[in-house]
Amino acid sequence: MGARLAIPRPSVAGFTLVELLIIIAVLGILAAIAVPQFNIWLVRSRIQAASGNLQQDLAWAEGYAIRSGYPVLVQIQSGGATGCSWTLTPAAPNVSQAVPQMTAASFASQYPNTSCTVLTGTTLSSVVNVGPTGMVYTPGGTITSAAVTFGTGGANASSYGYWLVQLSGAGNLRNCATSAPTSSVCNLQ
Image (spheres, helix red, strand yellow):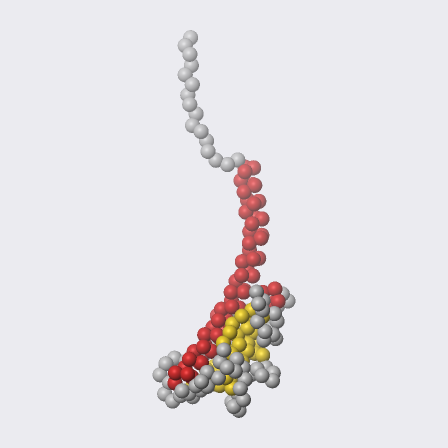
């Protein structure tokens, strides 16, 4: 009898069932950690986007007032979780460019579950004029400032943080993190 020739078997590449179960378990653990963090990131980015939108519109009002030589009336309305709104009204005649505005409905659709709080008190107001020099004053002529905080509603609102947009009497505009929906002080981080 002759020697048998060994027929080479093709090597089989793949995963065993145990290896697949381990990979699925690891992916499940990673998803359980990543999904809540991703949701927090989404809410925080929505809050920051809303505050950035107001900051841009206030910067427009300030720039327009300085360029045109006419004041711009700024009215900001708190809307809680139903949406915030603001209106910019230049006093200049025949304004030929689009004036930025935010209706409550637009705010609610662009920034769902985002709330705003207009801070009012002795020096903060929701109705201000931005003058041709960039100064901010009340309709009565007193120098003032405007401040609005943005956050989210719900039981864990503080875990997402708050953002402050403040236009000071001297025309300084800032957008920063703050500690509470009623705080007009920036957090240093």
